[in-house]
Amino acid sequence: MAAPSPKPRRQLPLTWLGLMPFVIFVTLFLILPTMHIVVGAFQDRTGAFTLQNLRDLNTGTIPSSYWVSVKISVASAALGCLIGFGMAAAVVFGAVPRWVKSPLMTFSGVASNFAGVPLAFAFLATFGPVGLVTVFMRNNFGIVLSRDIGFNILSFWGLTVTYLFFQIPLMILIITPALEGLRREWREAAEVLGASTAQYWRMVALPILFPSLLGTFALLFANAFGAVATAIALTGSALNIVPIQLFAQIRGDVLGNPNLGYAMAFGMIVITAIANVLYIWLRIRAERWLK
Amino acid sequence: MSLYARLTGWIVLLFGLGYFIVPLVGLTEFSLKARRGVYSFDAYAKIIGDPEFQATFSYSVVMALVTIAMGVLIVVPTAFWVRLKMPWARPYVEFLTLLPLVIPAIVIVFGYIRLYNTSSFLPLTGTATGTNLLLAFGYTVLALPYMYRAIDTGLRTIDVATLTEAAQSLGAGWTTILTRVILPNVLPAVLSGAFLTFAIVIGEFTLAALLDRPAFGPYLQRIGANKPYEPFALSVIAFAITWACMGLIQLVTRFSKHTKAQP
Image (cartoon, chains in turn blue, brown):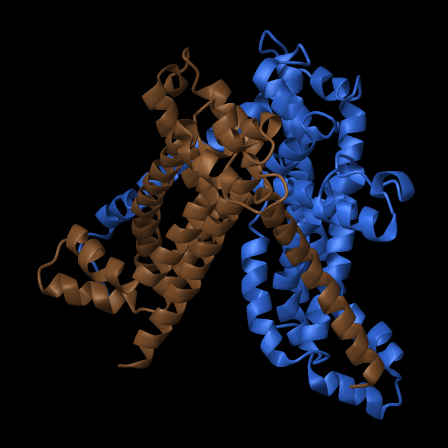
């Protein structure tokens, strides 16, 4: 390989050839299908260019489904960030014994991948009408979840609480390395200069962590926004969110306009893409300080 | 560290752990309640005896194995080739492999249904075999980010160029190099990717449901609507499989570290 090739011009196409199976596969089963949807979002039934589909997104139940989806994603991402940050901080800053870290990280690796139908059943069995916690609260404290605190698993908060099961571990996985990157010297320097713990956090640690926190929030948001199986298994069609509506549209064209379906899917791509780009950009920024 | 901080740390951690453990306990407890008044494995017995369970479960297992084979076949040569000959292309290839995390699975399968219908240039959804193949391709795409990252990390720990040159000077062709030199060296990485793929495919719902294939995920969702205890027993089984896969990944990773420590 190190020896210079006598015929450099023939090398190039041959080198490219090695990448061909991958490129063909990705083009056929990832790029083309996605492009088909994106292009379809800008076409009318005859195939001519139009922006009408995107305008039609503002009709019927579509805006409200986007709004509910965004709200659930924001709520589960915010709570996931908060609780995950707390748990990671407790482990990293030594409030709890160090040996907790390894099993917690392993567990987070598993749980962050565990979206899906079984997760929905786990929460139904726990917070559903005859679930473990529901029955326990009723029998021991006389609290009926649905009546006294207005909690119902087949609702906005029910879905949010369920999503947290994979949101919190994802936060722990991503934020733990960032927290470990906070150098002891920074804290000591702040203390030498007379800063209180609160001042250290407000003026040193949080500004450094801010890109990581915001980036992870964006990632968690995208994660919740694209979750389909959990939502369908948990609420059926009771909750009007984008993935459920799109699922129904693909199954049976409930919107009565295939191109409007494309536009809906396109909207989903745009939102998750923005969230992911934000995540990647903030991650690069975060790496300036944290390695 | 002050007592106050310690206490807060413990409370947060225990709350979080409770959050993870209670639903799992709730699920398991509920799945054992099929017989009135006592805990029993009735729901498990019933579900395992269900021929539809056996059919859908074996379908998903076969699908997972096919996906793993496809993933290895596509990713190992590509990652190897990029490392060896086209290092400049790595960011682009990596970007492509990460796209499935950006584009929601429901959008990808939507594209499949419209692009590969009976009137297209590649009418895959026209036949059962074609649709099965399409589903396997779809799963390979979903697993691509994990598979590529695992194998690329594995390749980083070995000296690809030297190994390839050594094999070539001994007269090995590309197939021999890949199967008998590179693959054995990155086997732990390949296995990690494979187990993760297995865990993803076995309970996958969206693709299988929309392509209308008799897989485990849609079956679980369907019986959830009309059976009282069985879906919960099935969910316990699904959880157990995922955990087993993740446990195996840990085991493989630890094992590979161990072998590397001995030169």
